[in-house]
Length: 312
Image (cartoon, rainbow, N blue to C red):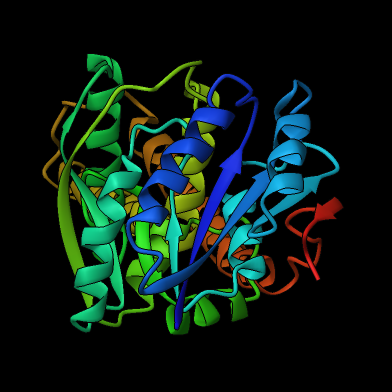
């Protein structure tokens, strides 16, 4: 019998933990004739009652695994950890706030059985989210896709069902600060956009304030694009060209004895623009080397596991 793993990061979710589990068990009960299941809860350093609630759930249900971090390492690190502990043939990634309804999992399994390796949730509507959140999300994906060489679907999050083969590839990648929704696009395989209506949070507040949104955005852009570095090179070329044209203009003005420039203006402008080009070129070259070093020496672990429950 095939097995389904559910990976759920938890950060200060004491208000929704029990309800999340109940909803998941209700859905898994409808597919138990065809699939075994496991639920991997990753406690991302919560200091409220989240971990104690998860301990109680795991005590009564041996199919529930709990992995608890030594501190908060972030949503993407928690999902990455959950993927490494998941053992199912199909792995579902979702948040605990129930904005992404677990009742959609049976439909996603059908698309998986039809041969799709990644079924990612594409939001038709986003209930309960502010204009600012919607605007910044749209802007982020527009900027990211403009800079990246990999097309990352708009109006998507981490909610998706992924084949074990794809998860094995993701787990084998050595890089740190993973931007998972980008990596799932980068690895390829057969992908299917599953449209759904995103609900409001069941309870609690969003765990993605502006600061964390900016961090996620920077990880996405830095990990999937070298174009900002290339842009510095473009500025260098523009500076060199500007210095050349100013020099030509100054020579022509001198030869034609035009009186339209203040004394010393040409030499100052040529020097400034030329040196700006030299500085930008130097930054570009150094940046290229640093980017390669940066890609190869990320050796610190993404997270530290303090304890586990029901994990062999």
